[in-house]
Amino acid sequence: MDSELEAIRQSVVECTNCDLCKTRTNAVPGKGNFQSDVIFVGEAPGRNEDQRGEPFVGIAGKRLEQALESAGINRDSVYITNVVKCRPPNNRVPSVAERDTCKEYLQKEISIIKPKVICVLGNTAFNSVLGGAEITKFRGKVVRKDNQIYFLTVHPAATIYNQELIGVLESDIAKLFETIRELKNNRQVKIDIEYDS
Ligand code: URA
Picture 1: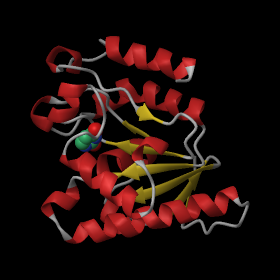
Picture 2: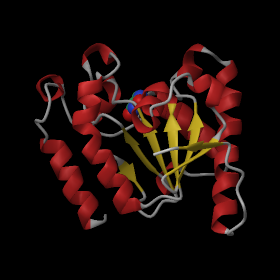
Picture 3: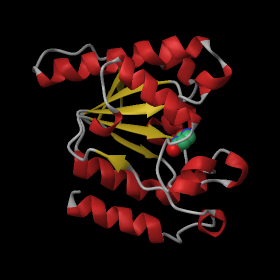
Picture 4: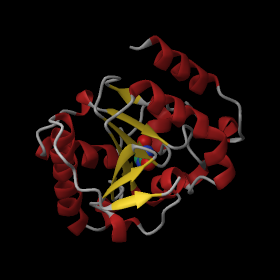
């Protein structure tokens, strides 16, 4: 693993910057290929992730993995992380204060990995990373902000309650990797939304 990422991993594991450290079993640093073209950003760890100290290892993780596989992508080839690195009690949505406190870790992960695309999974990540809302209206879109490309899609956990979203997630992930291929080939990518900084 990259030594800078290892240092962040260690800081996350030992972090006591907010009260979530009092209720967690394990902090959950990002995991995966530090040379990945894409970082997937979820909301916060759930019960399984808290137990194992790894992101997206429960049912939502299975759904993400299946969507990646349907696009011919192995999960180990990408980097997966969350806005908030510790499980909020009862899986509540992390507060704005918790998200702000944890923000530095995600910013560092991004600055080390320098992904071609940041894939935003669901509303909390959309709100935290881009200040957006209503991901279902904007999913499937390519966003540019401060020269960084983002891709928006639904949270994999949403597919558990709404089966129709399985196909949506799969087609979005296929579009995401098509976009990455185009960027790698220096082809023009259609930007759906330009965000002001
Ligand atoms: N949901 C998330 O947002 N992140 C995880 O790691 C697991 C479930």
